[in-house]
Image (tube, rainbow, N blue to C red; front, side, top):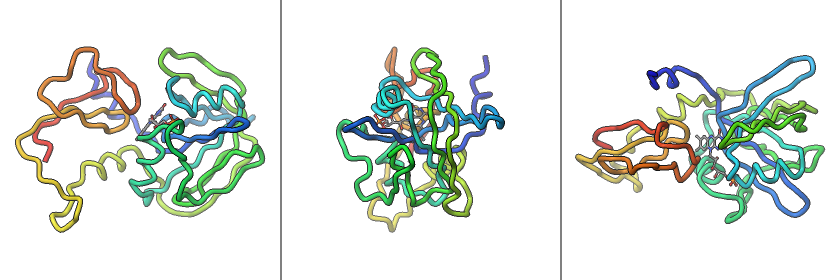
Length: 211
Ligand SMILES: Cc1cc2nc3c(=O)[nH]c(=O)nc-3n(C[C@H](O)[C@H](O)[C@H](O)COP(=O)(O)O)c2cc1C
């Protein structure tokens, strides 16, 4: 199998949110797809370990914010690299609540989808939630963020003038093709699992010279 074929697939980037009685969370996903138009159905696929997944399983409702290209990396970090069990995902974020009481982003977001889970499919490491779309709203016009654009941004060099610039030379590493996490080292440890999105080693590809 030529795993490079997977890089030919195009995706968008989204933040899916959910809540139960006392808890709430949200996480970055690239796995939202429209399933049917009549009735309006979409599906999202989330890792079983995600806190958001557990909340969706309990409540049966979720909201999806469609991210704009201008989304800040702080928002991506907050929702894509931290767990809602440890941090308040909505701190410093502009949001409103949908008809199910689920928060959605009113910043950096092109549109939102109010969803009710119709069917849950166990696909091994992940659960696929097939949802009825109860309502939608266009929030802001602008270029929506594609997964490819996210990677281009992430790979973009930091200007030397920026305070965050760090010079790294002659190092190799492995990049997760799901979330972009970089493992620094010549060899990926056997049975390695991405600490961010929990996919296995087959999703890592080698990159030379991390600078
Ligand atoms: C670019 C990007 C794409 C991601 N795509 C997915 C995805 O499709 N499914 C998933 O379960 N997690 C995905 N993740 C990882 C989750 O967003 C991340 O594990 C999050 O911290 C989970 O938060 P939670 O535990 O509060 O739910 C992605 C992360 C990033 C940065």
